[in-house]
Amino acid sequence: MKKKYRIKKNDDFQKVFRRGKSFANRQFVVYTLKQEGSNHFRIGLSVSKKIGNAVCRNRIKRYIRQSFHELEDQINPENEYIIIARKPAANMDFHEVKKSLIHVLKVGRVLKQKPNNSK
Image 1 (cartoon, rainbow, N blue to C red):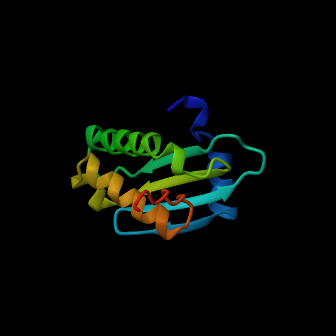
Image 2 (image 1 turned 60 degrees about the vertical axis):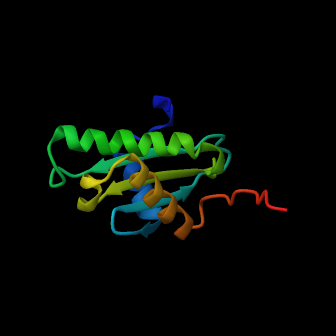
């Protein structure tokens, strides 16, 4: 994922926190804010020092970024997302992180449904 698609500045984080909607499960909290006219979503990550050491926190962030990269075609491009990892995320592998993110994005109704290919 390109760096221009990441949210880095505190003002941008605060705008999404104040104006956005939040959805959560046990592992993640996701804030979303609709940005009109945007052609690609932006993502901001927050992993507290309470979760683990730097290696663990960076692994979680890599897993989240890769999950969003793989789900790119199903995610609404006009939204900005802030993902906050909770403690249970520290013990998860990539597939569990992706499954949990899909769940919380479906709860928030920001994930487009896959077309049903069954006959």
